[in-house]
Amino acid sequence: MNHQDLINACQQEWTAYTQHEFVLQLAQGSLAQPNYLHYLKQDFLFLKQYARAYALAIYKARTLADMRKALPSVNALLDAEINHHVTYCADWGLTESDMEAEPEDFGTVAYTRYVLDTGMTGDLVDLYVALAPCAIGYAEIGRNLIADVNNPYASWIELYSGDDFQQSVAQGIVHLNELLAEIDINSQRGRTLIAEFKTATRMEIAFWQQGLDA
Image 1 (tube, rainbow, N blue to C red):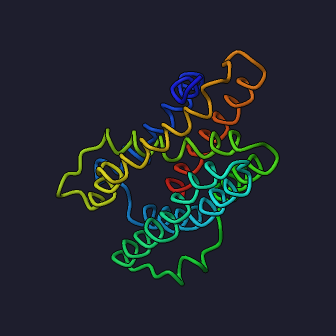
Image 2: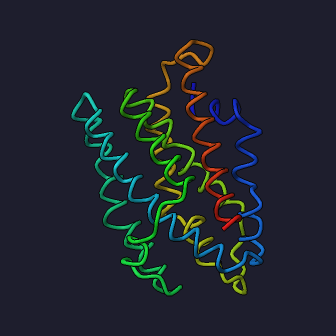
């Protein structure tokens, strides 16, 4: 099996995630600014837990090669993506201290702890499958959106449609597919991984929705 098999197995949820109303309003520039700021603050808190999950991948790895593959993602999150997020949020009047002090919404807690729990109770493949909808979905969303210069959220679209992010996700997909290659999609193991991917995708839908409902 491969990552596309996972997407195909939960196509309804995947479409609801990648074409969510939050995303559509963001693309049109019609998303209310308070909703966007709430999303940015929660996304900062999400990224902190996401970094912990990739650090868990080093702990769960059984070979030095797998440990090395996880390390760039940890470094990228801590040294680049989170720093970029902090710098970007400063343009919207949000400081790192503000975001650190923000309470986690229920959706943020549910999603991030689900990923961490899946990684703790399962193996490296379970962890990467639970992590996958975030990166793969944002890459798809980035490819689908056009950054209109008059859109106040154009820089967000440019980030996720940009070559750096797209190439990083493509590399991650190669690694994920290597881990999935020997697994039969119709086996019990395959069905378990599909269920994990589907749950994480549902969590992404809820994450957009909490931004829209803020």
